[in-house]
Image 1 (tube, helix red, strand yellow):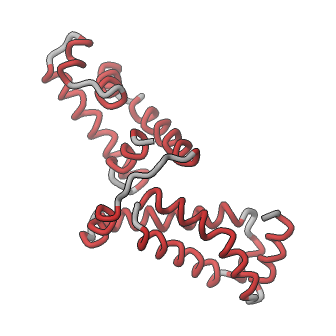
Image 2 (image 1 turned 90 degrees about the vertical axis):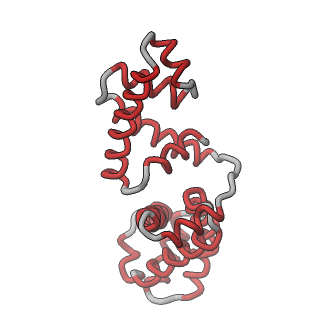
Length: 195
């Protein structure tokens, strides 16, 4: 959808034009659904979040003329909805059960790779605050998939030393991810290491 047509449709939606809203919905709903479903892996919940995004768009239609990029606006709403749901799911066992029940590994897309790269840069930034030895242990065990015994052999330290470094690294990462994203570290690690 080109910018001119999008601006026209947004103007029409802002005055309550259902047909213009339907056109925007048809253009963006499949993209939003794929984006959200990558995080949640649940058809029902992903569809519900997409519906919520478009309901918010309709409810805020008078403000649409101030939006620079509709695509960015919609994706930001969808990401926020998904992350809010993930935050709630740590407390709500029904949501967690639905997400886990619906989890189906899927082929990775370029978009998945970009998100994984962004998260990896974040993880690297946090790891850079740790001592060099802890960073190296994390790299060997998490990034290269070595066992504690293999990492201990490579670094010339005890298996117990490897375990202590990993515990320290994981505590720091868990704290930072929870503080900055409000989601469990395991979700970000799954995105990084499964893409």
